[in-house]
Length: 383
Image (cartoon, rainbow, N blue to C red; front, side, top):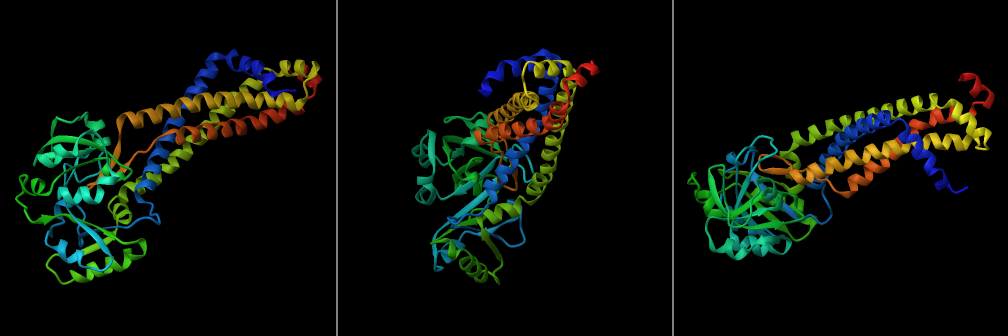
């Protein structure tokens, strides 16, 4: 028999007790909202810190410093680093943030040499609003990441103020790099002089090497070159640098994994309770179905299917709500100028669908097995 022939009966069982079904689905939706939010944070951590074979970027920072305000390196290190074998480009960067602590609303200014920045990164950036011409023409102009623009409601032609810097929005950029999504790129001298008078001083150097095999040797040469300098350096891969800076965030997200598992346990308990109550209230009906020719396994299938429908209904509502909130809010966990995006998309909805479907099956197995083994006469005596 075609399984879809049972669909009307399954739906009838689901809607018969609307109050119980709605409360169960609501509980599942809340739990899945939290589970999906945790998954979105974990995805963001993986994207920001997971190294790949294509990584060729190094970050040169002041040794034993973490907050951008304390990493002060002479800009003339640029030429010395560029002469090292294996280095293809060196970009001095001055970083200024409005808050060094962990926050959901951090604005990170990155002062860069404009022409050098476009030569190195221009092809990887998509200008979705405004233009790079305006950025090159104005000293106070900024190219801002799409996430920052969405969160602050900024569009080209507007000005905004953060960390004591007032900048003109020349364009909004989109990039696959996580650190480009929540940043404002401005002229290097503009950030150096903006209330700090640190001309000739940068926070870090972004170094590109010929291939991934050169990352470690080049990093060692850079640190050896400045080991006895007044401002010694520590050089790491870009992904390792983000992971080190955002260690507290990563640990927090790792702990949140237990919250996600707790949500799944709560979903299983809710569904199991709802299915058991439903089965206990329909013992005689199951006996009638068996009298009409339904096998015990078919009755069990109807019970399991009911749990799956309720689970998927609530799960999809919760997953869609979590993804919608994440995308609407454009949230990112930021600390000391580095961002961990909260990444939510269709993949998380698909995961929620599969997880809830599986939990619905598990929640219905025991009561379905018990119902399938119950004799018809015993069912009528139970009423």
